Image (cartoon, rainbow, N blue to C red; front, side):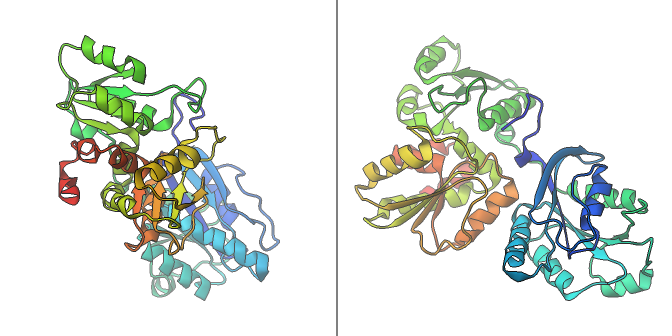
Amino acid sequence: MLSSLNGTPSSERTHIAFFGRRNTGKSSVVNAVTGQELSIVSDYKGTTTDPVYKAMELLPMGPVVVIDTPGIDDEGEVGLLRVERARRVLNKTDVAVLVIDSSVGFTDDDKVLMEAIKEKNIPLVVALNKSDLFVVSEKEAAEEIPAEYVQVSAKNGDGIYRLKERIAALAGRQNFRRIIGDRLSAGDHVVLVTPIDSSAPKGRMILPQVMTIRDILDSFAFCTVTQTDQLSSALDSFKRAPKLVATDSQAFDKVKDIVPENVPLTSFSILMAGYKGILSNAVRGAGALKNLKDGDNVLICEGCTHHRQCEDIGTVKLPGWIRSYTGAEPNFEFTSGGDFPENLEKYDLVVHCGGCMLSEREMLWRQKCAAGTVPFTNYGVAIALMNGILQRSLEIFPELYKIIS
């Protein structure tokens, strides 16, 4: 949710996560880098018990989410749960900072974590902390640490600026993505259908709609925003047909009969799937809907948490449409927000929302959990298939035609 009209949603911010063993001064490094008392600092081991998230502006990077994590060497039954939470942060991390106590050196715990970071292809910089107490020679550091590093002192600020520069350089390598703008030309006209019903947030538009409008404007194209009941009169009022109509997926059944066949039609959810990098697999996975049987297990996932309405799309409408389309009675399970099972073996199909509140990296991780063995699709793609317009909804993605042909 946007906190203001000018706020950058957390899903669009670079996620910078700080990892390390207990008492390496990790939280102190976080506070030094951010210039804020973001994390509690104590000499007592295990002060950070849960990941701490802070959305902020951090120069020279701009809008970021800074994450402080529990120590990766925590002990005991509860400690192991904390370690697992720290490791799960990797699934949403764009830049990792591994904090090491210079006087202790590079430990087996650090090595294991570094391997996990590299396995996930996360850009990494090592912060050798406590340089005010112990300085590691360049030769020793180069021999011991298989990654780029900066010697810092969170206590007196030495090296913190250099560390921020390295983080910024790594963050700058992130790819710039477009929702729809790379498929538009200046002067193109896009119509956006945004139903306002009981599930619509009061006084604002949902994030995918806001993001799509901004991307259209950035392309020097223009858009018309309308509700479903006004769509027909809006189309009649135009001198020429629009380049594209994008609708909330829930309105596909009505909108498909209003928009002329010669006008491309898609949904915000499908656009978000393309933006998050999961669209091709979502198209492949949608075919599993045709084979669902009584008793099959279907997992429906929302990336955000919100109050469930009586006609909630995830828990009410989608299950109803799936039952109607398949004629079967599958078992439905639901997750929302940060909850997502890493092991999906028990499921016959996973249907995920557009993921507007999740970063691209986290969406790709969730898709990867299916590992090609469990069909993984998206709300918009599934609803388009059930409405018989999947190929039409993908007309602006001609590179996907071979998947559905």
